[in-house]
Image (cartoon, rainbow, N blue to C red; front, side, top):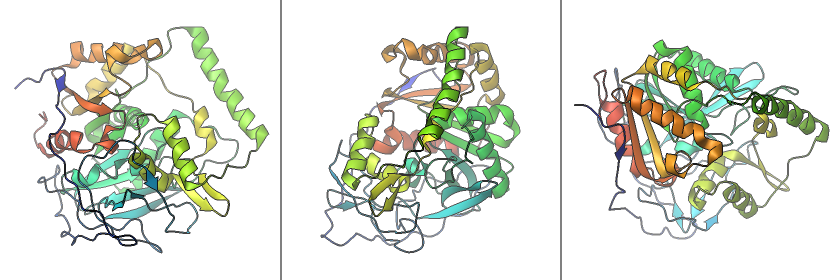
Length: 404
């Protein structure tokens, strides 16, 4: 059966809500058994949404899962439950303590420190590596992964300079290819020879590049609000200006030597929401749990300020199509109707997305699943049930040409 180039998926007509937990208590739902190991793909569609440990070590709590659609911009009350540096681990939103699936924390040694990650499911399951967006962290998948098939082993990593991962050494800029190298390091540490990649936004671009460099290691590619690649600037002067800006910003940050600003939990969340208009208060609070550290003066964002100066890799349209052809029949692209990449809503600065999508539809429409869903750039975090079914079907199909 041939897929249409673009398929629109209606929003779900139902939602589930839990009663409000008594103040000072959290809901506990009995845990489900460990998922069985998977083979060449995820097995079954049972969700990992039962018992949860929010983090590990001291301060870990049990909570309960709200599987329903979140209310936009919920007023969030935050508090720290773990004093370990680099972590900020709890959120209660209008009395609900959300369970986000049982997970474990991982650390992978690297020459400058470690790359942090969190994992769901049995390590015997089919491996799925999840890559977050720019300035985000592994928690971006907290509400989505518990809704996906249990037969997979999901590992969501923090890129260097993000979340709980170490910052790169002093004087080092953040090049796009460095993030791709992070992925290769983690795959090597896990001894994964072949796995599925799922990336959101910048994480999707990293996933696309990794697939191009190591096509034999990736069985399926899932892009959330990403087309997998960035187009090169057509104007030479604009390209030169962007490269110069990377250097100048890095040197400026080094000269200022600013101490990270501490904020109250409420102010830290508000600042995050102001910078990310697509985030709900609930989604922002979830990202903040892993994206800030509690200090005596308040919360300090974990991210390395140098990640703002990253140097990106860009390609021509022809190169993008050729690279994506390497994984034909194994790619799923999900775009949100109110996201950053819907062609008719793009401004001139983002014309690359329209150009790429048009080329993909005309050249690769029989080999790429391109789906448009209701929601914003963070639809996978704000309303994960909108995309979880599409992703689950793609993951569970065993044959080469995965169909929705």
